[in-house]
Length: 313
Image 1 (cartoon, rainbow, N blue to C red):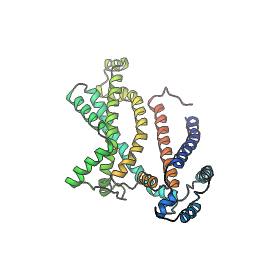
Image 2: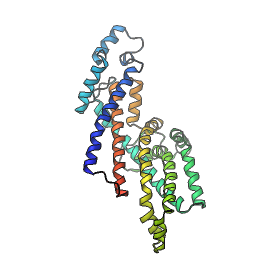
Image 3: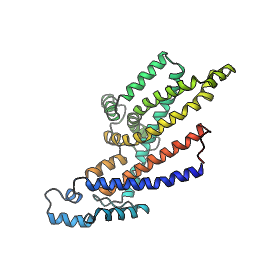
Image 4: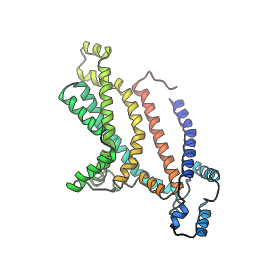
């Protein structure tokens, strides 16, 4: 397991290297000039050229890339072209909000989907099963940003239960949870619907296996059959789906942060794209790539826990 973990961490290095090349290339070919944007469209051409030299934009793209890469290896992602602040400081100030949103969305997804999927499979073709599948299809068909707007209209504008936007800096306080509730539901609901359907399918497949019938024939109670024998084996495909949902959960959080004015890295990234703030774009995208790869690594390691037949060494 340790060797596999180290090997996966080493594989992440060339992947991240490729990500930085792709992002730098996209930035290079994107239209717009940050110096012109900073000075305004009516700025003098000489002033624009002077600011380009100060920003280092007069250098060839590969020179800028290698300078940036050398600094990034040492944890320095440069300075924002718009306000001169350290990109590292900007990301560190926004990262807690994004992690808070992503983790709470994932918690909602798991807490809702896993029990509902298991219950739906155990009560197959009952009203519980039908209601669960209706619930799942409803959330799957609802785009996250659209659900976010509906939640704001109902729970914030009409009924005034939750704040419309923003974030409270408190930790696990009622005020902080009231700000977090709607963005987390909007981000996690669609994935909860997908995971509910997948959990139901995986459980139904396992419940029809011979060893489940054998367990029942031995007189093991229904709860013991479900929780001890069925669920653990059904979790393998479910974990695969969870792993596939993590990147979409992280990427969708960018849209949710815009809808709810959530002060996370997603809003920082969008603002940086519109302002042609290249160092910030490179730094934030790299952080998102690292976040997704670490999440996938954790999911892969969980396979061996739920299925001891899987040996990574």
